[in-house]
Amino acid sequence: MRRPTRSLLVAAAAAALVLPLCATTAANAEPPGFSHSDKNTLRNQAPRDLAVGSAVWGARDLVDYDPSAPTPFQRVLGAQFSSLTPENDMKWDAIHPAPDVYDFASADALVAFARANHQQVRGHTLLWHSQNPAWVTEASQTWTCAQARDVLEDHIRTVVGHFKGRIYEWDVANEIFQDTWDAGGVRLRTEANPFLKACADEPVSLIGDAFRWAHEADPEAALFLNDYNAEGINEKTDAYYDIAQQLLADGVPLSGFGAQGHLSLLYGFDTSMQANFERFAALGLQVAVTEADVRIPLLPGQTGPTPEQVALQAERYDAMLEACLNVTACRSFTVWGFPDSKSWVPGVFPGEGWATIFEDDFSPKPAFDAMLQSLREATPGISPRRH
Ligand code: 9MR
Image (tube, rainbow, N blue to C red):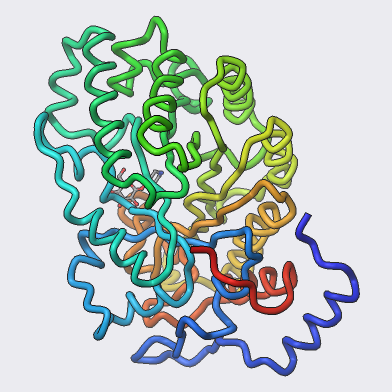
């Protein structure tokens, strides 16, 4: 438990009165003056055993990085977060565009940015049904399981090996279970995922080997299962709980379970999130919030979120962070990019948006303020950054 004692809470509340919050309502042309030494940043208020991260798309936002002249976005990214997740740069279509071609350029730029800013990197992702290159989609039509295994093994050994020692957590298997509303309900994606499809007779064996190959390529990295709609206790997380037990019983080097945390104000918050994390922690696993964002739906005629929606968004972000802070096995909490103009949400959910914790001018939203305050209360004072 990382919860503060009552007296620490009182002390933190008193400190909050004298320490100016970096949250302001002013719309600045320049980002607020965040710096690595700023006490009022997420990374510097986080408990020492919790990385606070953001997704970032290296190919779009980091390849031009000049440490002596960072962009406003890069300044905030470096100052606020102790961990980065490549939003797209380590996915198959980006990093393995042709059978014999690996392209590490933008992922390397991301890792270089992280090193320059004393940040860790979460790898994302090695086995997924989406964002596979055309050559995989085409070749997989005729794969035997042995062929699929060879292709996946080469990919995992090459990619994980390339970044050996520079990635602290890898999302090895992403979204491997269907949703309740998919045909067949919650079961392994043996149709949409080309690798699981080729090995539909023995998918768990393939998944286990994916973890084994990754572990052999980088024994220091913590290896995760990761999915959406996986915050609370539900049919999908029951399936993950079962497969995690099975993999562990088989001696598979599984280290953790990640709940992505893509929420919408259209739905209520599942208060069983902490209990869900606790049951995975009881298996000896780490847990993580890997892709947090909270999208806001607008009614017809509305041009922006209401103050009530913004306040509710802050509550939801903070509820996810609290679930993580309350479980010691939760070692990383990652938001899925910022500011709103860089978010994936409007492109996928028409009518919804405003999902991140920073305004487009990088002024912090109430969600940021709430998270900063919770981190401050969890461990009063400044915790050393993780390196
Ligand atoms: O944010 C990512 C977006 O830029 C891509 O276009 C999209 C393609 O599927 O993937 C988004 O990230 C996803 C992540 O990799 C896995 N969980 C869901 C995320 C949002 O779709």
